[in-house]
Length: 219
Figure 1 (spheres, rainbow, N blue to C red):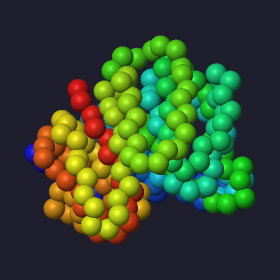
Figure 2 (cartoon, one colour):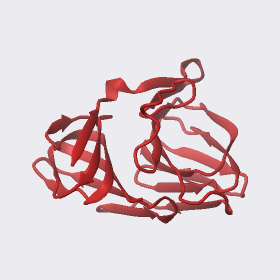
Figure 3 (cartoon, rainbow, N blue to C red):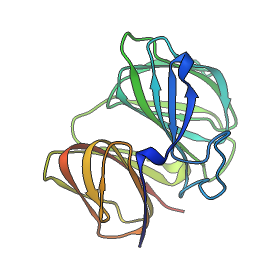
Figure 4 (cartoon, rainbow, N blue to C red):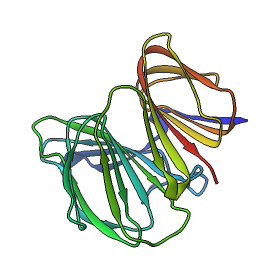
C-alpha cells in the first residue's frame, strides 16, 4: 500500500476572479499542465469551485467524461443540452455522463456564495448516449456508483472521535470537505487529499466534525 498526501495549498489556482469564479485544481488542468499529475485511477479532475452570486460558466461542451458534482454550500443551477434544468444543493449528488457529447451551463443564480466540488472520471468505454442523474440529499452516509468508470463515491460525515472504514480497493482518493481527519498517518484539513494505492484495512478518524469524500476505484 502506498499513500500520497496532497495539501490544499498545492492546488493550481484557476478560474476568473474578476468574474467571480475561483477554481483550485487538484490535477493537471488546462494551462496548468503537469505530466506527472494527469490522473489517479479513473479520476482526472477534482476541482474546488467558488462562484459569487450571479457568476457561472457559460454553455460549454464535454465528451467521454463522467462528471460528478458535490455542493458544499449555496445552490448550483445546471442546464444541459439534453433538456435538464435543475438546482443542486448541499448533500445532493449530481452526475452528468457526457458520453459522445453534451453541452451544459453552471451558474450561481442565488443570493449567497456557492462552493462545490466537481470531479471528472474517464469511462471504461467511450461514446454512448448522454445521461443525467440527480440524487437528493439524504441523512446518513452516501454511496453513489459510477459503473461506467468502475468507481463508487462514498460520503462520510463524522463527529469528533468517530471512525469510518476506508474501502479496500486498488485506488482510493480521499478528500476532506470540512473538518479534520487523521488518515494514513496524516492529519488532513479542508481541501487536503490523499491518494491511496492498494488500500487495505484503513480507517479514518475525525478529530473535529468532518465531511469526507472517498472515491473507490477499480480497473
